[in-house]
Length: 213
Image (cartoon, rainbow, N blue to C red):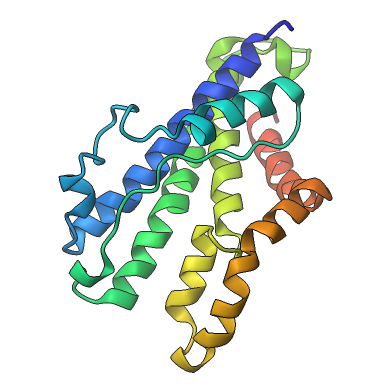
């Protein structure tokens, strides 16, 4: 099977975005007093300590090659809530850090892609025909946007679910904990029923309109 350059760019962007997502969790935890990730050697841009062989490489590669929706993850950064100064409040910020970083990266990359696209004197073609100086930041923006939106879904074990746990009144947590074991099943259902695609597609359409106006 031939692998085109957009597939390679997408795969590399996905691995980088997932790793930065995890580092952000550890950095914010450190700010609030928990140095667990730092002591574990996880606050590094070196991808080796972060890579989960299946979740970071094999699964994204299979998705990129087959065209199916891609799940991807790195090894979760260790966080010890007991070491945080204010556990519930600070864990909310730690949970926000991952998708927040992805949204920030998507915004900056989209601006770069739009700037580079505007510098083209004339272009009529498909996304596959865009020059690399446009397609690389555009795909990086798309990947980070996808990860940010995906991780904001309020489904365990995603960051959106962690945020709900930090803001729910304590007397409602018992009911939430009963739902939590079924989170991965719900994720698989929305993935293979096309629901995830319907959630994410409008965000991508806005991105492409912003860049390729």
